[in-house]
Length: 437
Image 1 (cartoon, rainbow, N blue to C red):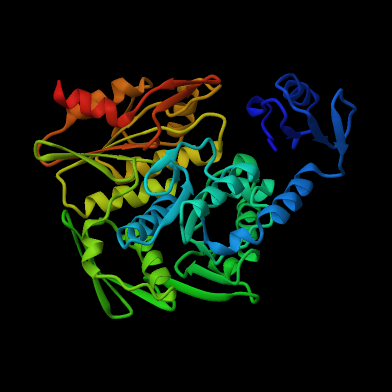
Image 2 (image 1 turned 90 degrees about the vertical axis):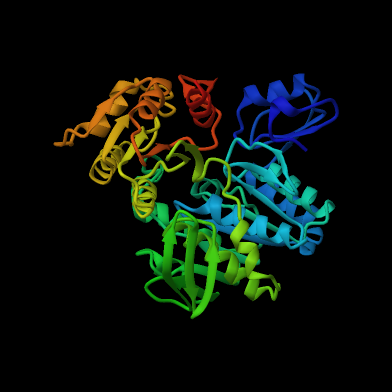
């Protein structure tokens, strides 16, 4: 069965989740021998159902429910930290020789990356097929990022999760959800698909994810079942305590300790033994705190694209005691406009200097987006360079002794979305090419 008319080949059954007649006809032209739709008559075997997505959910549950008992699914939701939280657990388990798959923003991984994904959480049919593939490859666990859009659209079907994890909730996607309450309630849906919840005690929305139906575990610096204390942070990493048990890691920043602690809680709950030394050699996901050394400077590429994520990473790099922090950042087009001015004030208030630039402008004029970012600023420690490549080059040229340059917003992405087209573009490639020159 296929739900994308472009992927249909001869003999396939096509299910139309949008009930768009054009896509159905395209599927038939591509060779579909049967179509499942909510209305319409077509030239091939046609099954009409009340709700195509519900039909698909029931079909996949019947097909896979027994098989999926062989793997433990872990879902991570929140505004920031999903990718790093998932990636760290995936990485640690595989280092321990326990096969774990990962699905999320940077792709589908088993022992290595298998493919890129167009959505943080894939559509239902693709998602079930990936879980099936993970089981066939001997995976005992699968950890995945669960987006609010996926929960809104019902992409998880009837999946049940061994654990649901909440990282934090800050402003994002309000172009779709309209307000923070709606955004929160969509994410809350994940916690009705589990009996075991792990929740960030320090987040103001914490109580929305503590459901009476679940076994709830909390963690945080301000309290919780797992109390965190930061003992030391420098260029070499972090030392912290968790319920008076001391850990050392090469990861930098308070927000990365939040991300790592989730793995430590899961390891303990699952009874998985490990040597603490494994925490000293952890990798960041692609485009998350990706550091390029440049003389006595550091250039850091990161996906931070919300006000809270920008605040966290700038505060973190100041803890490394640089001379100056220069930040390059923009905002995506056709997305939440209300966060743009907050991003502008956050970046300028915390950085020594800021270059505002474009970041996936889509169908908007990049200068109009930047105008939204700077409209409320009454400071002078910034400039506008709409061309992202030129902005990065200028940032590199500005570096003095022991400065840090932050290139924020795109992280792992190797494209710019301009209009409706994806144009090849990589922050990390631009940085590496120009420091060589």
